[in-house]
Length: 354
Ligand code: FES
Ligand SMILES: [Fe+2]
Image (cartoon, rainbow, N blue to C red; front, side, top):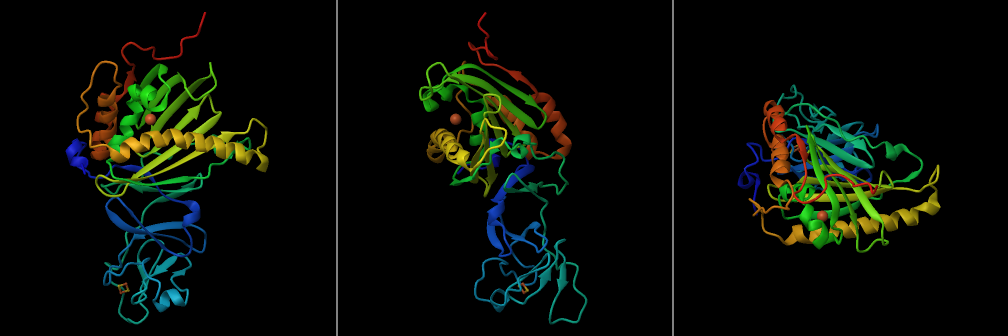
């Protein structure tokens, strides 16, 4: 399994940015165990409804906060109190800021080291996102805005959990530049294609007549990463919005999710539009499954054997490096990566017939 160092991405094993860590529905007052960024973590929801992610292991003696079903702390349903979470072993309680705020049996002052690391979370689009930063800094960019989420014309996605992939996220990110797989893998050789890199965003424009779609119907997509782990793709100017999120689990493995927001074509979508939206999402998932099968079985591609006609992999990889390097280096890397990149022998934009 190739890791970040093999790809030469930078000094940090895991990238800086926003990452999906759960569907919103999965986070409840019963703490759950997750693993991301090489760490065991726990998600729970406080009485206010706010979601929290904390270290899994208690600083007292190392008990796992969520992997317990038999302690009386669990039995008596006192594990989550207000916004605090209690350890099942000796019942130390930790507040929303991660600091221990009660040791039930000890009269002594609570030691400063009695604290859990807490993560910055946002709950949006039916998902929970965590900010990861090896330098411990606050977010320096936001989640992508999806105005369609609040537009009643759209049917919300029902997230597909794609599970674990035993490959480095670099292999997924490469797909943004991968013009030459679109025909062979997906049956949609593009008529035009370009990548545009700008700061924390990396974009792909393309349009293709697909084998499986109606004759003469060109599927045009505007697909972009906002940071390293969240991809949106607008189909034909907003007919649907595809969402793919991927989050490192360990160095060289990841978890992924997919969804599709679908425009009903009406001012307000109703329940009767849901089957159509689910069918479209299933079609989108089937296309993603064509990539997934490759990713699940390929060896690592440390250095593509590039030929003319391949996309701008080196530029997209350069863009991706900014997230594995100190924040102070990001502007320098962006300046090198920014630009518009076409493909030899192919128009960069749609050619309008005269
Ligand atoms: S190990 Fe958590 S309270 Fe003792
Ligand atoms: Fe693909």
